[in-house]
Length: 120
Image (cartoon, rainbow, N blue to C red; front, top):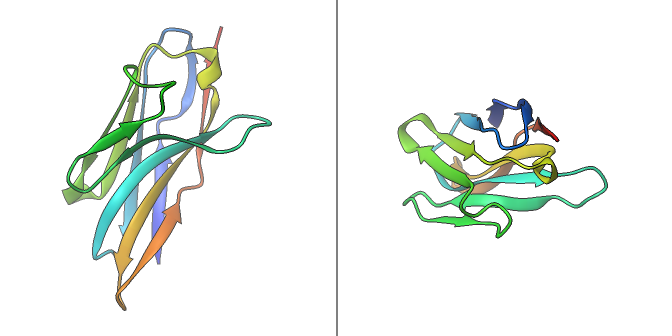
C-alpha cells in the first residue's frame, strides 16, 4: 500500500504565504507525476500545479506567478509554496501522485487533504 500525507495547511491573511508538503510512503518503486489539487466549497476539484519526475511543472492560470511546486525525489515528497494568497484560494488542498509499485503497475494515490483558509 502507498499513502500520501499532507501537512502545512492553516489560516493565513490575504497577501500572506503558506507552504504545503506531501510525503509518500509504502512499497514505492518510483513516482512519476505529482501534483496538488484543491476543492473549494460547492466547487469541483481542480488542478493547482503538477510536476513530473524530471521537474517539468504546470500551473493553473489562477495561481501562476504566486504558487511554486517542487519535489524531492529522494524523499518522495512534493511541496507547494503559496504566496500573495487571496480569499479565493481557500479550499481543501489534496496531494496526488502516480506511483509505480510491485507487481509492476501504476497506482494513482490521493492524500486526505489539508485545509487552507485565507481571511480577507
